[in-house]
Image 1 (spheres, rainbow, N blue to C red):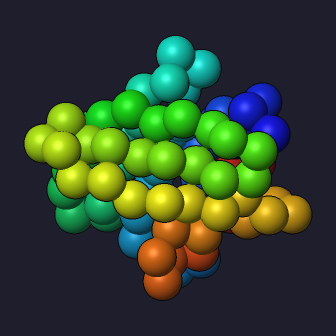
Image 2: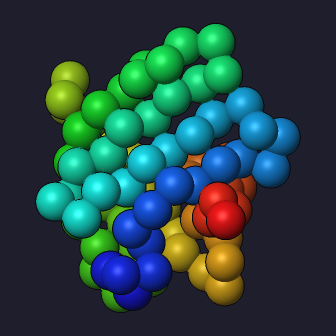
Length: 78
């Protein structure tokens, strides 16, 4: 699951880009705000735990080609 998570993910509407790096760091950018959030993530099977640099936490669920975080659904960029 860890290898499957690494890469760039984009919301279905294209408004948010999430880059998951191999070093356990991530960068989230909105179409209007580059690098709006940065932090670290950990992979535990199909669950991704995110903590941004300000301390906010979120849970993501990795499925077949999708990553869901809250109400947002991401697809891996080609």
